[in-house]
Length: 151
Image (cartoon, rainbow, N blue to C red; front, side, top):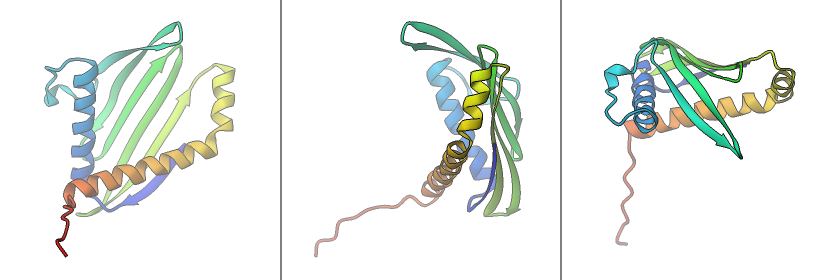
């Protein structure tokens, strides 16, 4: 599923936000000593999950990291790949168009069926994700200070 959104942020702001959050997440799950410069194209990591009594792992790879143009993360578990990518087109210094894609590739029938049944909900969630991402970046740029008045 692909959605496109024009955002009121720069491509530099977008990738600064993505890299900062990715680095924090990787420090949490991989190593607190991980440096920002270690997070690059080709970087792989594994997360372990438990669902009830079942344990499984998700192997992830940063397949593309071409700052300030594109980013792709691929997560694989049980023969199913989930792909998340952003292709950024700079409109001007303060605006970008983000072509955001989420896809699931699997030979498993139930995964394919679930994917086709949830396409409308997935698209809505993806748009909400981009809206939230844009808002968080804009808030970082212009942090609002709330002051109580003594009227």
